[in-house]
Amino acid sequence: MVEEVVRYTYRLRPGVQAERALLDEWHRCRFLWNEAVHQHRSGNKPTFGKLSKLLTEARSKSAWLRSGSQNAQQQMLRTYGQALSHSFTVKGRGRPKVKSRKKVFPSLEYTTRGFSIRDRRLVLPKGVTIPVVWSRGLPSGPTSVRVYQDSLGHWYASFVVSRTPEPVPVAEAVVGVDWGVTTTATTTNGAYDLPYLGHRKRCAAELAKAQRKMARRHSGRRGPQSNGYLRAKREAARLHKRAARQTRHDSRVWAKQVADNHALIAVEDFTPKFLAKSTMARKAADAAIGAAKRELVDRAVRAGRKVVLVGPAYTTMTCSRCFARAKQQLELDERTFLCRCCGHTDDRDSNAARVILAVAERGHTSVDDVRHVHPSSGSGACAV
Image (tube, rainbow, N blue to C red):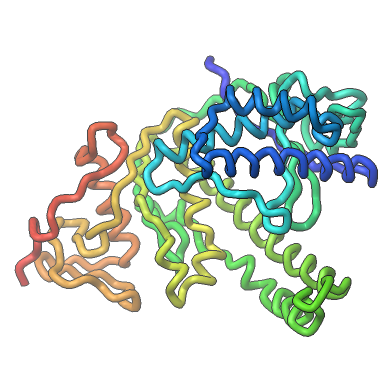
């Protein structure tokens, strides 16, 4: 069986000196990233090879750069080169930007030559040793590690390892998935629906209290931020992160159940970006539709299931029984679908899920058998 490459993430407990060393290393790597951005903006457009030569020259002249890890600095430039090439290949993706000291969280990458694990501790260059909270064992020796800090100031280590995938059960069932806000995911089989759990809604009172504290205290506009403001800001970030973790855990459990029990998974190719400008923005952000969709697609692909992404256009207007299309679009407050041709009545989202599954089963997909191509809006309309 072919091994898969995955990431295992663990919490780090660095001391005062280790954390200071990590932050100093991050400032060096951030300086190199910003210099590469300036080189590109000036018209030089350096490649990774040229950047490596410039790094060698800079380290020979600067004792500040030599005091850091060359492995981490080279990895930062390699990441910049990959981001730059990715911006040219992917349409709509912007070029790498300057990393601000106040807005970007520290993140360092090391290859096999730049780190080791001794006595259950992570050993980094320049004698930096950090205890690791081993919540589970590594399936194999790591090939690289990314050390990063989150908004709460917690440090984590993300190891890249290879593991043998777990055998998935044999499945013949099919399912269609429609995304929504009232119910995060509505499927053709009601047993696999993902309800809106509202984790952030339950801690809204605590979050509002922390945000009111932030509003009352000194935010730093007239000098350094007060300690009270920083404590309130940290508390608000902690509540946000706790709700996000709960939502992510529920999405992972649900995605595993769907991927293990279905051979064909038809997923609505829904982009919830426009919801951020609507009255449902807070609820949609709490539901994390995009994260649930990515988790479902990734797990299904790893399990060897057939995944078809169907565009959302006209799925709500089409009848799942006779496939006639209504002339007018349903309003958001209309939760029941009624076909004027055959009289079929169903829940709005359940009808859309059945339409999505029917489109995937009929094979109306593009060449790569991933995305559905819609016909013109005038074809197949119901005459009422």
